[in-house]
Each structure stands twice: as C-alpha cells, then as structure tokens.
Image 1 (cartoon, rainbow, N blue to C red):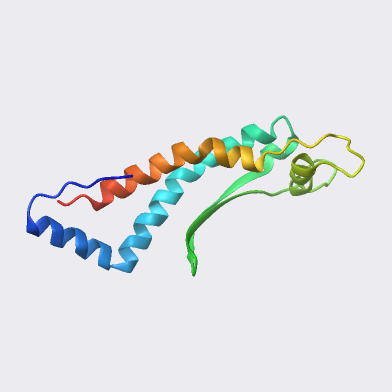
Image 2: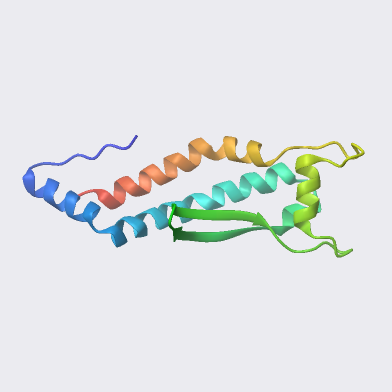
Length: 133
C-alpha cells in the first residue's frame, strides 16, 4: 500500500483538498489505469500466442461508470478466413465440445500474472499525483 509523507497541517489540507475533488480523483485513477493497461495487454498477447488471435488484442482506454474507473483489453478483428479473433480466443479459453483442440485458459493466467506489476504501477502514479507540493 502507498504511503504519503506530509510535513505540517498545510500539507494535510492540500492532500484533503485533492481527495475532495471527485473529478481530480477520477483523473488520477484514469491515468493510473491507462498506465497499467499495456502490461495487461502484453500478458494477454503472450498467453494467447501462438494463436493468430494475438494480433487482434486491443486496448480501450480508461473510462468511468457507476462502478468506478476501468479499462478493457479485448480481442477484436477477423482472421484471413473471416473468423472473429474473439471466437478463436474463446475456443482457446474453453476448448470445443469435442475436445480438439484442448483448452488453454489465458484470461485468468493473464490477470494473475499481471496483478502485482499493475498494482505497483497504479500505486506509484497515485502516490506521485497525491504528493503535496
């Protein structure tokens, strides 16, 4: 967890002022999520490689909704035969009913392998943004 050093009451007031501005907090959160998304994107590409679907991995920048700030790494596009990359990625994740090819789950593996690095990136950005001048 991040820690912030404050020296005196004025620093505490500045910090609280930043936290009270919902727009500022959302901007900091969006900046942090956007910085962490390339790490997750690389992991997703690595976990669905050597599939052709790896070339369809795309990132959608951070947005805000009623649940909070989020970013999306998804699979879009089509292969040479016209099959959606999302379908190929889905077959990799869950397999087919006949068991051929066998499934190779990539979603949970991508998420768990990047949790630490992404958390560190987010923590560093929030800490740097919240430091008092």
